[in-house]
Length: 128
Image (tube, rainbow, N blue to C red):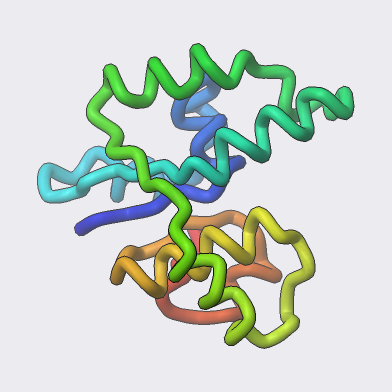
C-alpha cells in the first residue's frame, strides 16, 4: 500500500515514533507499505517553524534527508494537484492539508491522518 502521511504523522514517525497511533505504526511496519511524504509537508514545517509554532520546531532540511535515508518517497506538488484543490468541499480550511488530500486523490494514495476534520472527507483519507 502506498501511503502519504499528513505532516503531524510524518513528524512523529521521524522524531517521536512513540506518539504514533497503533494503527499508523502497524501500517508503516507492514512489508507492503511504501511510505510517502509530500513537499507540502516540508513547506509546512518551514513556514510554521518560522512562525515559532512549538509543534514544528524541526530542521526541515534534516527532516527531509532523514526521511529519504529511511526509504520514504518524496512527492512533488504539481499543477494538477493544485487544480484538484478547487474540487474539494470546504470541510477543512488548512491549505497544507487540502493539498495533501488533493495529492492523495490524484496519485491514488491513502492519506494517513489523525486530523478528524481531514478524515471527514473519507477515502482516500484514513483516520488512524
